[in-house]
Length: 141
Image (cartoon, rainbow, N blue to C red; front, side, top):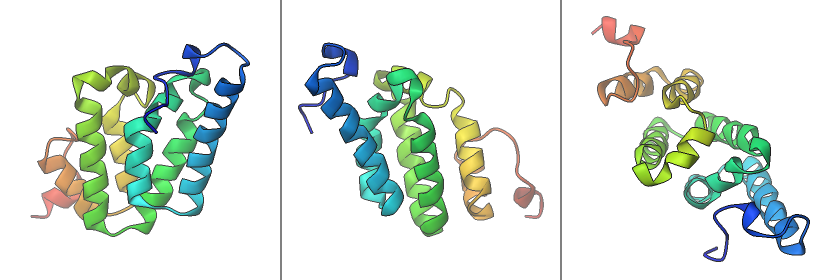
């Protein structure tokens, strides 16, 4: 995968190489939706968020849907691992362009994913300062 460019725009518009890369992006996301695999997700995020930066954010919704599917199908410990990976990846200064393209508000992404998954995970995110408002589950402690 090291031959992938930083942006589709590095290739001439309408070229065969550009079309191939767009097909790769679509195939990654389709395979992730069909088989919600955490390792594939991490791979797509680490090299594939560039797909969300191009094409008018064409793949942004697909990637968010894939994240939602995976968060509903994995255990809480794996959810924490995924969100920690996402958080660390997006807070890295080298990934600022991707961060801006992929959900400018990371907290809202985490919140929407967590609300669909588990309250304990939500509490963990609060304690690790990934979210800034206090969830109800912490009031009961």
